[in-house]
Length: 269
Length: 313
Image (cartoon, rainbow over the protein chains, first blue to last red):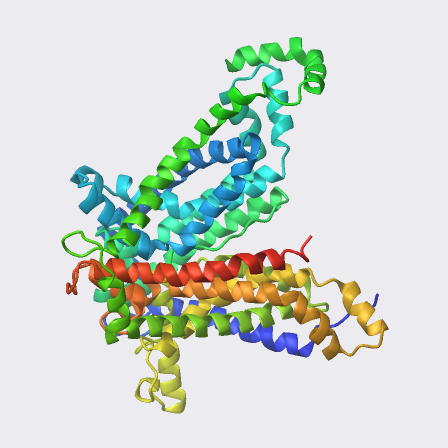
């Protein structure tokens, strides 16, 4: 077959697409270089402002901790469940798959209304629960992360022979915990890691629930700083993009190494 | 247990093969199966506490009055009150427009990146970028565009300096529907590229070759083969994009806060943070309204998805 050259119309669309995608990133970078005092280029003052702002460090640490907690709880809850469903209850698979679609019709803005009404007005939950991001927010974030971890893991479990692996392991005398931890988990490591990095990106960017339940996380810090200082907000925005980039690139890299591609979309908006 | 298991490995190695062959599943039987259900209880209990019950509270609250009695007033008020009706109309229009343009541009860019002749690195660059950009969004995305086409944004000032035109004096504003649409496309187009790329990949080169061997023109190929095969995927993606935009809160909040573009999620958010407290059940009724729209989208999406996967192997 002869080697074809790139079609002219393809060039047009690709260039237009590239411009639309790159210009805002470049503009944010230029914006972040403007001087805090004069508004002219170029100064690193905005970056200095962010780095010396204690709120930046405290909120980014909080968001990172919440992300780690969400990942741990999510994996501990979902890996055994999805494993068990693949192994013993294949008829439940459509139901779990349906559950993974529910967050699409109950997006964060609806979920936060429900969570506040349910825990505050119906259960009268105490403040140590409602006011603690590690309980209330992480509780909600595990649900937000569920579809992404599920689609990742489901693909992972489908690509291995759960039955044979389990039987082999059990016939050799392994306990359930050994089977899950030393046989199954290493085989779905790539899927679990993709799910974990997606969760990291989602939690680090989640604004809706955090803001409306009046928690002060990294995204709410971003919003707040923009009201006072526009240029540092651009600097912090770039840092936030950097986090998303790193998380997503990690997925691509581990996915490539594992010969598997799993990229899903986020709902942090 | 683990150590013991490993010691048993050597002893049982030969036995295991025969055992597996003779025993299809570990201890089948009714008793065993009934106990298997216990394994998914933690998951469903968690889902109930953080998803199902809260969602149910919204749905039930939408149909309750202040004394806890059943009423349809809250929900009907959405249709009766001009402001609320308006907010649904604005939200639906915005979602439809961004889903439409997101789908069209996403399809064109995806096809341009995948078609024969385009170097492989361009394809993977767009694929990688889309994977990332579909996850942008929320507050940072809004700020990136405020820095670009906001009142003192880089492009706004560039146009001002080069052409002497202040776009904000000519009817453009980032907090207007037009501005919000431009920003939303930044996650809609990449999402379309991600969703549609596998479908475009599924268009087999043989189909195009066979049709041209039979004398079909390029247009006839698209009219009778390409578009019909892609259509369920395109429509499915449109529905996905619509929901994606309809449910977005953070981006719209950062772009429009204080300017009064009455998108449904924004109105719900205002309700919740106590800015407007006309009716405590209004937020739940609006959330219920959103749910109805999104659920209707889902009812379109699932059969489309099923049809689209017919060609994928």
